[in-house]
Length: 411
Image (cartoon, rainbow, N blue to C red; front, side, top):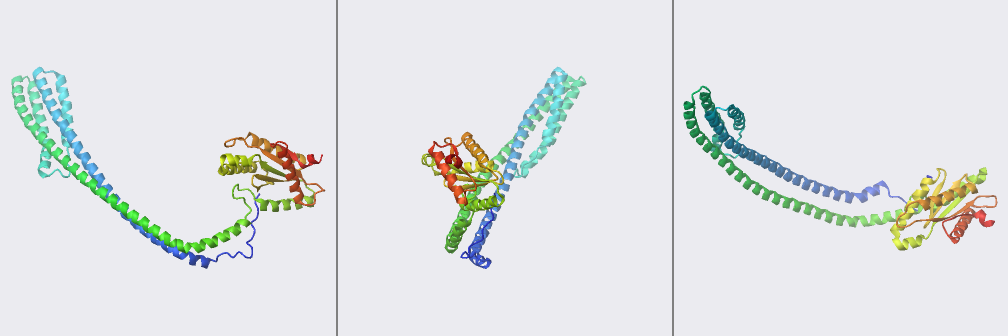
């Protein structure tokens, strides 16, 4: 149930906005200086990184072009030789499959030759040789085609003579291809050396960036140390105010439930309402069994986790009109408006069964529960609390993990 906040006591004087501005000014100036230095360091480091990345990308593309050129030259050399063999076989045997295979090689070789591209650092003489290669390949293939045409015309002797001359031309073409391959290999070696130099430069820049960031962090640390001196008095003031405000809060810091102060206020309100309108009112007090033993065995953090889980279970089962509070330590309390003794016992038994069948860390958790209900004999809400507490101690004395109502003790 939501509880309205209480005003600050007269002796608590909150800081004015002007005082806050005066106190925060040194901090803001130092943080602004630190942000400016950090931004400069980040901008410089980013610029160096982007430049190195762009150069690395360009080198990678250059290396890819050189590798592609070497692959094309190798393919060109092997397929030129294969084309010559196909035409020789066709001229010698007249089989059409050799002619078909040659035409397929002709198409591939023309495409590869015309697709040759010189890298940027290939040099003018080498680039000129590479530029002339496609026309040489096309002329050589046309000569082979003309020799095959002589064979088709029935002039076998002339075809063989032409083939012999074309073979010598093919040897010269292969030498040109070999020269281009050598040029490509030299360019690749130079690119590899340049890549190594660039890698060394990038490593040097990385060291510079790391040093720069280290200096920025060191400066930031020194600024924070200086700022600490300006913060001490302010922190002490805030701590005193927080201590006073913490005493006024109505929420338990561990479980998030209402605390003892909120419980007392709500119980008085519900007591007065029940008296005024003649409504039933019950109180359930719950204590975790063997909680000290659990803390000793598994540690206080594990015990805190149990209290949070139990608080969550109680809050989920409570009605909107009920108030669930942490009464103290491992004790919880539920204020049940409009609830008579029998209904309160049902609530208590339901809670006991819920805790018994729930899964808990390390071991099972049970609770002893005491219940009391308002009647005409009770004059104050304190009596209701006393009776529920007494019933709780009887439940613990009778073996724990049980629910006892104050009315059953009177009988």
